[in-house]
Length: 507
Image 1 (spheres, rainbow, N blue to C red):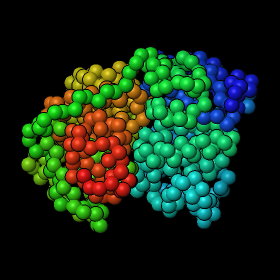
Image 2: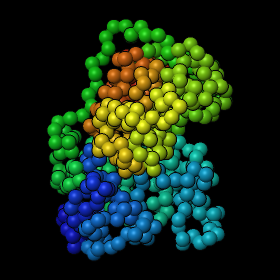
Image 3: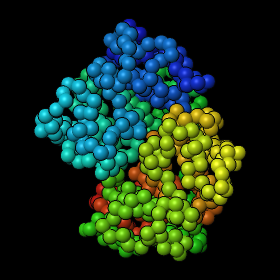
Image 4: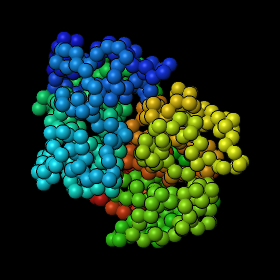
């Protein structure tokens, strides 16, 4: 692709679009033009306006001014259903799936062409065909609520392929994928581009942009900064364009000598995630981060939720102790009272309430003693203000609905909320999924502060860079089997990657 499209030649795009939410201008006179058969990366910090632009192009939001462009002409996308009819599909960072429906039912949900009584045998066969053709294998009869995050993403992509979408809008599509899965997805995008599809790719993983993007548009504070051909750009150039300075989360110096002699805080013994998997044995001490590496779907959800008391999904429960006290049979509130905190993988579904205000979200799980017999609004506002300040949440409006926050700012609110009362133990699952460089830097800093204050942290992540940068010790979860934790300084990234794929030896 050589010619850059304009308003009259763009296959898809936005012309002079502005969108406000109350007093906040999310996007300000933005024009973005996409060519047919290109991968166009949209780059910007959390809160820069990327999500708003994507949702306008997908028909979820209507612009206050300006227009959506298709084949050089304005078009009104009154809803996502209208966008689908125009061949525009989107995979959201927070998935839009119904847990109580099967994969096949989710794929055709909202498709009027299927009629009131769709031929589900034909639908299942077509889903299997698409899944096999694109390496997105998933059982059409599986209930979505039983799927891992990575598998749910496959369902979202299958929805677009089933609808023969020609513009694919992908919001952080590799956030929970392993290196091999990411490489496969990027190959799929290149394949779709060769077939004439246009891809609008939003990711904070700069290496992915440099690998597959044809052009890159940078947005900052609701305005387009520049659109450039990839050319000879390197990651440092992209980071500088995005945040206006050199930046990125830095790994702390490796700890030398013996590990901190903190007390044993979390102990997990004897349980089995799957009937055929070996018993789990894990101890985490105060003042350390133990990274649990693993490809999504190998038992991470079961491990985290079982310890947090959210779901008892292990084949054999085993024994879990926090600071010497057994947690077997205790509910979530009782475990929180003992000092256990939990950052879920899905911030939108499990970590927050989109229709509630930031104040209401910030005080979820707060000690009732702060209120006494009555709802103490001044105390709760003070608590919320402190949480938002600690997390650097923008905009600092505690009466704003959580659903109007960017993903990064919502995640910072959740992490700061869970860190608020000096927890003894933190279970952090994919804590920086889909976040920009600046937000990752801030969340890593919060986790290190907790660790340095004596908290025992279990970090679950498929991002090896994150695991190796934060962890004092590293274990690998593969098909429900957890290796013995080893000091991070004694492991290479290739060693961990091999263990994650089942080709390496036990740690």
